[in-house]
Length: 502
Image 1 (cartoon, one colour):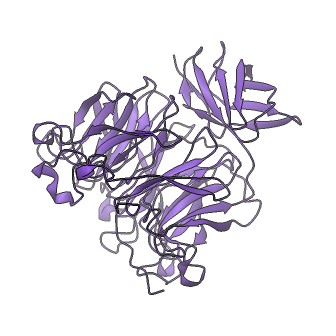
Image 2 (image 1 turned 90 degrees about the vertical axis):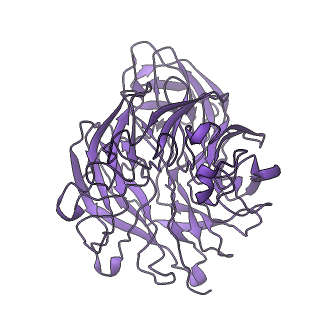
Image 3 (image 1 turned 180 degrees about the horizontal axis):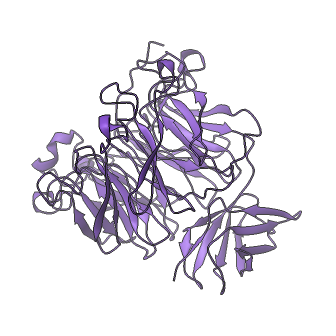
């Protein structure tokens, strides 16, 4: 294989974290390629995966498929792969084209996502995207029933926005929230949409000259335990290098931080994706540029920011000779059950099978200790993949899963598993709720479960399948771990603290 040339694109992933003590790996991480895309079944996956209640993982590719405009697929933890939908199956790509961001599973069981192009509104305002339209919001059932809910640029002058490339998030009120990186009043929007498709623009960026509130929010939003939504704008702000903001579900936006506020942009700049919130209340994320290593415009950073906007740079990429630690960490972060934070870099690393390096996987302890755990293109011809872009996800069996944009047996990208000796756990959907509400608990081998508790308060529950339990949040429950006891006396803990809201 000739050297791979990896381009810059955008994706997102948003997760809530719980930072506790940080044990070391129980074994050296081992990467296994589960699927290599061949073009016909999809090509160039920009996004990560999501585990659904039926035990499958779902994802998207931004190209390939029957019509060359991207796909939706599902895959089992062992690698059994199915293409569920090929975009641009309708005349004029009315169903959408080129999905970038992660899918999410809403509380109704359907999966929701967005395409950056396509739709039935070929408005000249968005012709510069080159994506056959202005973008869409869609839903798909776990078995593949597809519905387009909204086509962007359906309003005059694209007042509803266009070019959405992040992921959606479901708020406590049941609505789905997301961003467009362009359109609206000028430089992007925040919107909400009901699961059935009623669309509302919540906020327009660049309200004032110079865009002090930010512009071009590429990533999605994170739902915090206080019910507010937090996100990143890639540009604008006081210094033109992006912002961190929060917005209430009703649309009141507050700019928390403007990047490049430090000399030489040591604090980073140009954040592309989303934030994650820890149990300590702080938010964590990455900036694609800036940092302490000043190859203009810098190689990017990992940072922590408090809800009030105090930012701490935890790591600057390309701190090792030859950028063997990687750089340009575009995708989101996640936390595994060992309480370490995991992410990926698109460039750099120890292997030179790609122009500018093939990318890495890394982990960071809550206190900021950084280590590279995998270098892509470690196998001949880059059959292990190259250029990981989206966030990793931890399946409830303990393994980590992700995708690479390129490489693999056919050069169109891969889906991979990273085993690190981490154990089973359970995950709440949603991870926030009021006493009396019914939530879904994901897991593995849940049949025969004998007990469910919220921070040690017993709850009534129903075992739906080996992968799913429904439970009612009990009186007296407080924020903390969910515990599920399964046959053999095994106790499974939630990977995040469940947030109780009033």
